[in-house]
Length: 557
Ligand SMILES: Cc1cc2nc3c(=O)[nH]c(=O)nc-3n(C[C@H](O)[C@H](O)[C@H](O)COP(=O)(O)OP(=O)(O)OC[C@H]3O[C@@H](n4cnc5c(N)ncnc54)[C@H](O)[C@@H]3O)c2cc1C
Picture 1: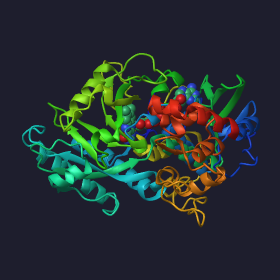
Picture 2 (picture 1 turned 60 degrees about the vertical axis):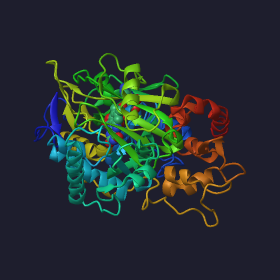
Picture 3 (picture 1 turned 45 degrees about the horizontal axis):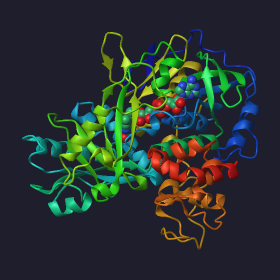
Picture 4 (picture 1 turned 45 degrees about the vertical axis):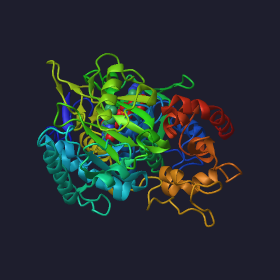
């Protein structure tokens, strides 16, 4: 395994003359030219047509394996640089770790604490790119509040946290992100603290320290926006297609819906399969670590508008967060547990993790949460590289681009926030090693579907009022779709009831469900419930919405 790129790995320069060097020749598979060409629409019709155009024994520039944030980012980077790109995802977009995150767009504060200044700065820069240019429609500034409760903080810990927050602020400034977008660190009084997080304990409360970071409305929606934008630039985005027998220049693609198999030859193959990377390329050895979140009703904490940050007893650097979410929930996370063994499709939280999270957050709440308050829970796996000597190299926050002896280029680690930089490094590596005919990377200036400045983004049609009452466009729809909301409304044809919630108490509209199938590549009910919307995070919500979703999905197909 040869590290090849990224700020974190050694240099690997010069012409590549090994068995994977090329020739990069032969007849290229032409791009898809059907009715959706040049559009960002993903759906079953386009998928079938794209597979047909690809055919057997196609030659392309770049094969990307994995449709999480990393793979979707690589596909966008490559397609927007003019490379004939195919992305295959075995299950659905954002099926893996990318939907189990804390949904924060981090400024890199925690890396500063461990002296990793370069990584911290990279994170702050990428946060700024996401919040100002590529996806501002999906991200809001989230106040993160540390309550000043003397029995919760060790001596000197408040001063330490304040210093860290100010360092984070300095990082924001050097990254060029304006204070108007992410307000400066400040101390607030007890009243203001209670207004932001009404559930906070009040005995002895001396106010709070507040810093701001970015928060995604949902992580899976970022992945879908990336994949759709890649498709608009000509990438074939193929879900339910598994890559097997992968080499540096070829793979067998299995359409898991039909069983059909296709061979593909590529100038380069990028393995972006996260914790599954070792299954695609056996020279990669990972030791995953599990991170768990619990979901409670936001009412249980008094409908907070800020994140509550609670120090873990006995540690100066670990915290549990209670993060307000869409759909009226609060997510409480996060753990960090060794998770050896086979990689499950959907990792499960343990009882011990549930107890740890509840016990820690309860120390800062006026009314303790119980198991009965927990409406749902989810866990995701971080990839750690196994160095083989019993230790792990923590690349879960830093990323690496590695070339294996087979020639497969693996991009692994990192985080949602830095997906763009990871993608750029991976494509730069493929271009350098294989002489691919690519233009320079420009994704830092490329707005995603729904972002202001994206070519299809529009204000709402004249006369369509915002606001949330029946017949008005709910703010939650705008938060999830930004400048593409007009398309959602058009897809639903604004028929009676299209803006009604899919089930009582769930602010996802029927129009959004239809749009998920017609424009966002959802192929079945699970794609809609579990990834295009996050209704499925609470099983009871999913059951309430299921019948209506089934009907809309059947109609929209
Ligand atoms: C608990 C937790 C919380 C986190 N919170 C944050 C956060 O708040 N902010 C942040 O910036 N980062 C966060 N991260 C990090 C971030 O979520 C991950 O770095 C990122 O999602 C990894 O994405 P990925 O695309 O590399 O992998 P994945 O999302 O796992 O994608 C890999 C994909 O490959 C597919 N695949 C596997 N094998 C094949 C095959 N043979 N053929 C085709 N497809 C295949 C899988 O189905 C999967 O969809 C968090 C991570 C964890 C675990």
